[in-house]
Amino acid sequence: MAKESLTIIDNRTGKQYEIAIENGAIRAADLRQIKNGSDDFGLMSYDPAFTNTASCKSRITFIDGEKGILRYRGYPIEELAEHSNYLETAYLIVKGELPDRKHFEMWEHNIKVHTMVHENIKKFMEGFRYDAHPMGMLLGTVGALSTFYPDAANIHDLESRRLQTRRLIGKMPTLAAWAYRHTRGLPYIYPNNELSYTGNFLSMLFRMTESNYKPNPVLERALDVLFILHADHEQNCSTNAMRSVGSSQADPYSATAAAIAALYGPLHGGANEAVVRMLERIGSVKNVPEAVKKFKAGEGRLMGFGHRVYKNYDPRAKILKKMAYEVFEVTGANPLIEIAQELERIALQDDYFVSRKLYPNVDFYSGIIYQAMGFPTEMFPVLFAIPRTSGWLSQWAEMVRDPEQKIARPRQIFVGEKLRAWTPIEKRPVPVNREDAVDTSI
Ligand code: ACO
Image 1: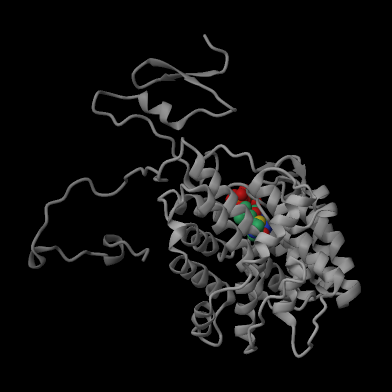
Image 2: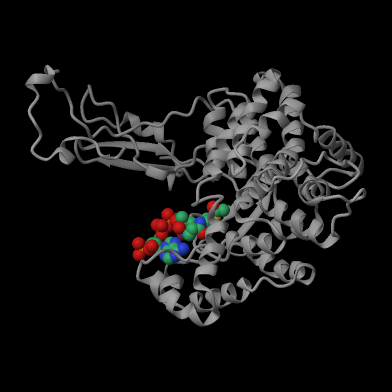
């Protein structure tokens, strides 16, 4: 008997099966041979929210949640955050290797030539209501890009994939900055390609009447580090959306719009906003013990704590905690940091959090930093979407090239009515309790 295998005995039939184990996993389709009779569909695995199901093989990002390890293409996140910049990290994620100087300069040039957008995109954005959420604007506008680039439908063409990747990485800061300017009633600022990727973004966000806007180098670097930390995170909710929509062979703009939609949710890209609101509600360090008591009693969650994958300190949170103070040197301290530190101190000593392996995640400190830099909370998920674009596109391209991938289509376990005969409306019985009789979930 092969060693790398699993023996299963079906107690319904007494039959024994041997299923191969590959890379620490069994193929769910191998379970289908386990049947309770000739008309049985075969055994399925039931895994709501995919908590224990690998949907792909990937070479991009490695996470060891128990040990708090995050690596892009084998490089530890700590080293990238210390030595790299976002565009170089994006190259690494997309192409698999760190670039030499010549290739980096070509890559930077190829991204920067795509920072401009069609003037009709500007008009499209101007059409949003004055108080539109910038994430909703980004989501709609990225989806609209697909109508400007019909060539993007050639998803099996390598050159087309490369072009759309450069276009999207190049245009995201422009669209994000314009969404922000729109909500402020300020004129949109065109890109300045003499600045760095993050420097240009700061210019498009914050430039007023200066003829020569110079981004603060500390804030420019801080944004670069934040972008590096958010560039990819393997099969999270938005990446799964990107792959799932992309699996129908939709163009990458449409798939990216779907990923942005997933990131919009408060349990994903909106968590750092929730952290800031929570800290503001707590209001003062002296209120922290009482707040922790409430979280333990199930009255709300300690936002920015806990993670589906990390059961240890999120390595990105460690980097951001340190970086917060460098940003505060320029911006002035954000008083919320004192409350956050006290929350962390108390929670990490408390058996409730320790026994459940709940540690600070990336969102615990990122919102405080963004707020100190002058970003309104609605911009937080937008700031997440810009760098994650390189991760989404890289994951999408990996999926497109993977011969094992097909259109994503999970199974269900049907628990509804089996078969009913249609009756005319006059003959339908009046339900005793209407709420029991109809689906009240929508
Ligand atoms: N505060 C208090 N209790 C918590 C928290 C929290 N932040 N997170 C989990 N728990 C508790 C749960 O109540 C549960 O307790 P129980 O076993 O007594 O029922 C236990 O810890 C396990 O929690 P689950 O919800 O099963 O864990 P899951 O892996 O599904 O959730 C999640 C992960 C959604 C991140 C969760 O920890 C959470 O809601 N955290 C706060 C929101 C947040 O910070 N999200 C950002 C995630 S990072 C990102 O998306 C970039």
